[in-house]
Amino acid sequence: MSYPSSDPRSKLAAPAAAKAAPVKAYAGADYARFYAEEPQQTGENERTWLARGQNFIVAYSEVKPGAVLARAAQPDEYCLILPEKELGATVTAGTETIEVAGSSIVFVPPGASRITLKGAGRVIRIFSSVAADLAASCSNAASYAQPHANVALLEPWPEPRDGFKVRAYSLDAGGGEGRFGRIFRCTTLMVNMLDPRHGLRDVTALSPHHHDDFEQGSLVIDGGYIHDIRWPWTPDMRIWREDEHELMAAPSLTVIPPPSIHTSRSVLPGLNQMIDIFSPPRLDFSQKPGWVINAADYPMPGETA
View 1 (cartoon, one colour):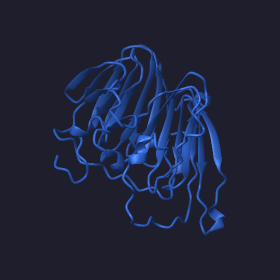
View 2 (cartoon, one colour):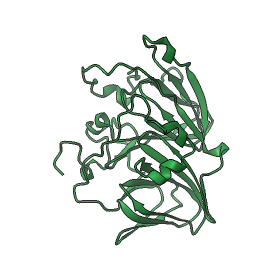
View 3 (tube, rainbow, N blue to C red):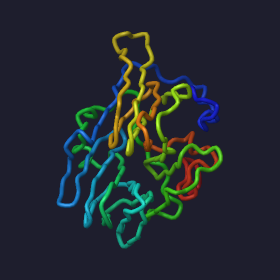
């Protein structure tokens, strides 16, 4: 890891001394430019783009008033993000109906659910790849015809302490001292609403790092970023890959594979906003006191529910 001292991640605990498994194959990064592609789902009041990683699926929707986003038999929890203050929703799951304000993140329980939007704007849903119908519809579904190299398969974390239900949290939660973004988790996902960047990132203070066995989904919702990705050399030169420096504007999803070294830099004037996605939740972030805003609702592995 290589974080500047000003980055809260520089204070993460050092990884376990156990040596990672030798790398015998690499998977490439996946790039889904929603702004340059046709949506995978269309309706009278919605257009939805779908792209995936090994363990997660992103559904990015542009909606009009009256739009309804429904799941008839969702196998596990999923995440709803309403990034705009002006766009709220009514969320129904089972016998429960909750009014949710804009600028919220919501975790919706398994089973049947219905999201009724109260205006026009952007809506983001994040699912685990257990949702087979959505996985098959993703623009990059063919990339995951076989599991990607070096990525551990999803093992859900413990159920919430008082059972599954609709759980809504404000995205306006303040960044606590030393907190890295605004982090939320459920049984299958961790979502980090990164602090917005205004203008270009300082290229003398980047944060190149890698993950041993999990992907990072980087969802750009405002502005634009360049993702710099480098695959380490291995004894087997046949699997070496060229560095990539990919410009991704909003809206777009980049899936960054392990154990590639990566960093991202905002490159447009004005607001640049990105959301990081991990599945399952990250243990290192979860072990930092105060980092996960809704930690009281979702136990870590080994904790008593």
